[in-house]
Length: 136
Image (spheres, rainbow, N blue to C red):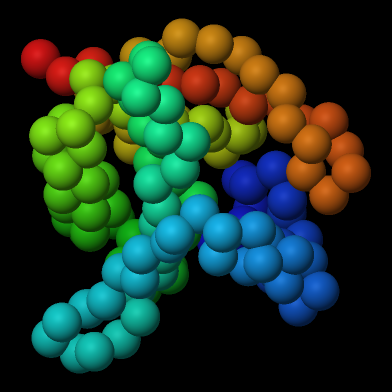
């Protein structure tokens, strides 16, 4: 279910996940850890820092199902956004067009949809939406 709304719906397969893992490891990912239980909650990354536009992307995020529906995703994003806004004026989120869960989450943060893009995922052209959250 983690991947059902993701453009790569078969990412649960070892070889497909391995390609994703190899890619996100280049994005300087962060581990999201439950400090009370020492369980891995998921990962996230900053990516595509653009000093000319004073922007950075936040994404390549997944959280295990055990932590869905609570404060975890929002608090994780808030921590990253607060840090990013010390250095840039704009945070971007790139979300698959069918990933309604993530779209709702960034809208709740105050981001606005600014663009429709196409990315290549596993050799296929996939529609994405770009959302922007501006520093106040």
